[in-house]
Image 1: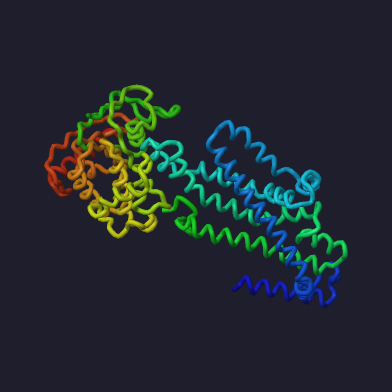
Image 2: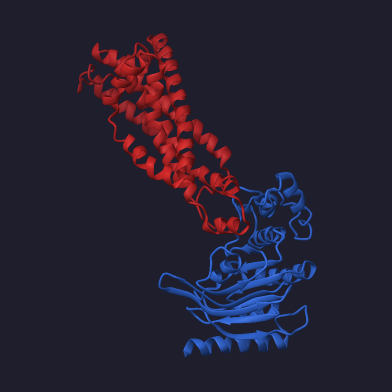
Length: 249
Length: 237
């Protein structure tokens, strides 16, 4: 309730500022103008939303698969861990706007470079959180399973993988929230469709209201994806106490 | 087969946890290891469970099952699945493990809580689930690490009586680590007193008393005082 009130208040203030011509509407369109653009451009925008959502969902799926593969491999094998960890961390230092045109050059204007960009942005939080979660196991439970002569595989299946789930979900939620950035950069580098593409064109044409409308949809997309995974998390890891993060009595 | 530790020494870096510890438990005997915190009691159990190797001395022991200090229940598993965990770990299917665990639920006073997760169980129930898991491992030796340390006084005394009964039904060789001298006197056939770090055996007391025992029995009270005096004397020296 309070949050909704705050947003309404901010929107009203913003509207008033633009109406009073304190700022140029070309730089900052009023919320009502943005809403207007959302409605009048609904045909293009809904198509763009569909395109970008497709890229983001496929990219996230790829990131989850890659993150799971890397996280487990790094956990299970010392040589793999030593080889891959610096590369995984290094991958996050790659400047996205610089690499995006390269992807387009190599992979063309199709779906592939977009999915790859989203995956590149998203696999890191999944990998690292899964890997840390697998290592951060209750030492008592670990001792218990070792005393029972549980095989490496059974320790992974019975103890390590389930106890890594909460951390992994944190990683996945972060990935869901930032996935949109990857898609937008990839569309900027070379695309004729998608919210990022429309954002770029609208900016060039000084159609600020439409640019804002596209941004609002990107907002909504990120929030919806995050919410989806948060919902899934509550269903899957219902055992984690909400108040005490972990190890609570 | 008896359990036998001879002149066992274990150090972690420069910290000597145990030094020259010798103790013995005959089959189906309960031996209580009592000592102040940090005297290497948990290390002793880890050695018996083969989780770590001694630096010196020898250990002859049948296979042992560990009940860790904090119950070690997995928060995402139901009481039934937690109780069957030892079976799952050795490759038994989920269904069979559940069936085997469920056979004991009534005797353990857990009926109706099969699907409850550890977070929904009381402290006493959690310990019973953990003990059932340890029992179902099917090992001749049970290593219990302060099993009732986290319970309130009332629950603890109930659980002590319950454990004594359970061991009468299903006799096992038990190594019981505790800092509670009275608990040792109530449950054990022999009490081994350890000194503060490095843990050495200060005294071994045979408890040749009939069961069931009550904390108010004169013999128990005397035994408790004798053990306490032995520990205090050691600490002052």
